[in-house]
Length: 117
Image (cartoon, rainbow, N blue to C red):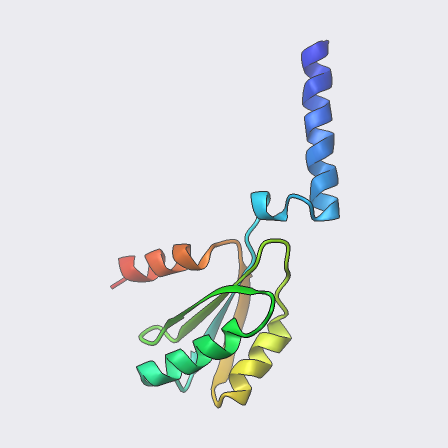
């Protein structure tokens, strides 16, 4: 009986933590992954990276010119605004053609991109 109580208590704490956002960094990583047209050189990639790193909720940015991918990872406990990211990229002169939220870190995405080469 004691082990059932302990299991239920742990599950209840985990659910409460998820609902309150307390365990965000433990259970989920929020990264916005965009397909961006118009990037042709390292200067383009560097400009987008610098712009997106200025956003207070941004932890890391990765730009893959070959695959036209920009990935923006949120800081622990922060949420990313896809519309804001799209606006920043468009203001820099590029076109966002696809935007998705994934549960991968920027490092995970870098690893995937390197494996595809």
